[in-house]
Length: 434
Image 1 (cartoon, rainbow, N blue to C red):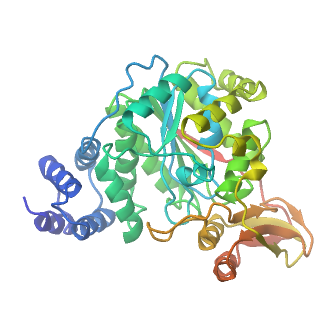
Image 2 (image 1 turned 30 degrees about the vertical axis):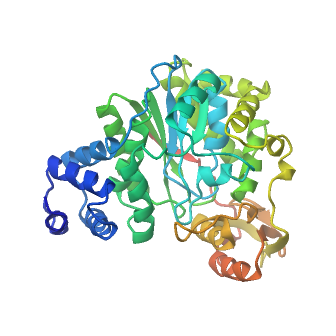
Image 3 (image 1 turned 30 degrees about the horizontal axis):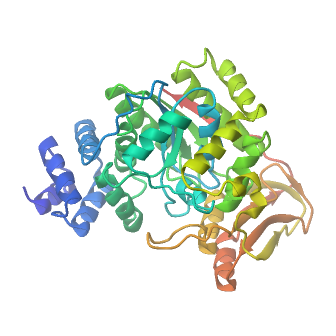
């Protein structure tokens, strides 16, 4: 087969056969198809899409590009959660220990930040020593012992996706429903799951800007999961405003610990419990969402959820003192405050502008080789609905380099809009797709 011919056909809105897609993905994985050729194919897919048969073949080829995990020896139901990415989205970090404390095995395979959105692995690596790369044997043993793993892909698990994931970020092809759905679902299917809960975000800070796009993505992924006999549910959630009050890495770990200890901002708590309830119901560990929420609350108030998190940190090489004493976590030395120009009510707190600002500070990556600074980030003092006076602090930026601060301030300009009346409160969770 010839990569150029396949690229040209998809460019011209033609169909690819299953065996052609299998050859393309396998050849890209082993280096016969180059990055620049796959970049051209990704753009062709971005522009022209994949039909249902092409998408099934693409996902299957990604899934079988490497090893598939086998957790048959773990007796507990195996359920994972995945978010399509947002600003301030640290939900996985408190959610997974809460669900694991309720008797569900959570083999959570997470990713790094893409553009203006943060990554769970980057946040976890704020904890000194925390190791996100585990061998399949280590992954399996830890899941059996603690009920939870918080790690990235191993070298031999879905290697095609690992290569394509980085390429998409550098070629402007991230917001493609076929590429997003096949990327997410190939990794999740490789985990040998019984069930999967998806958090599909839409809004200014998400890759899907409208609820219609989010619904199409959710429906596509639920369909893939069902086709592979994995019980799959998706929640459509808002991402016009950052989730929680912290945007960065180490500061988001602190906020996650706050959730595990019974605190945390209302929107973050709402979404964490909503996703956790879906996970417990799909795992047949709860008879209803209300029953599930009660179990999750008990796991937090009893301290069991926080104990699970500490055990996972220790297992994965992290210094547990930084979890027990979050003030030890990295924190950049310099502070800049953004203040309200007028009195009124916050009507807009734009997630995308804030996410880009955090990236400019060094909390995210513009290029895959960029280094994350765990101590920089933003604390949001005012979000939609909050009353402010002229001069009220809207956000505090922590930074290390003045030049980066200047870039961050340019990016965040206009992120807050203040009006004479509070906006209508909007729920975080908008719709359920199953």
